[in-house]
Length: 138
Image (cartoon, rainbow, N blue to C red):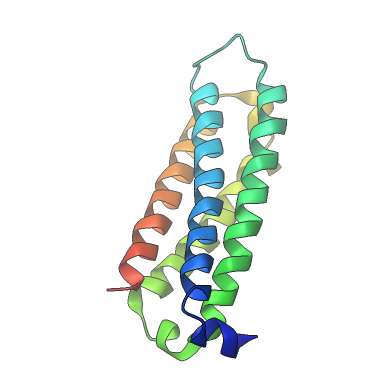
């Protein structure tokens, strides 16, 4: 399979496109939820929005992770030597830690200053992931 990914003219660009779609689903839904946590669209119950947005965000993450792993498998040594890739991996770990903290403390029920800060940090981390992803190729 890795041979096909490296040799077929459309395989790697298709993986990149799937990766971007996954990131768009993830980041778009997290920003939507963040806006609600910050007090926008208060007519929408936060629990209902969170169920929808987080479900789609997780699907986006799964798509981005699967396509990213396949892209990584085509050139692991080059990527492991790429500073932007390493920073991106660190940011992904930070995103996971922030998400665990957010959900572990029940931030969606509290909607307090800490919850808002956690959402801002999450969005900033994911934007950093996107920037690092673009810099990997350069």
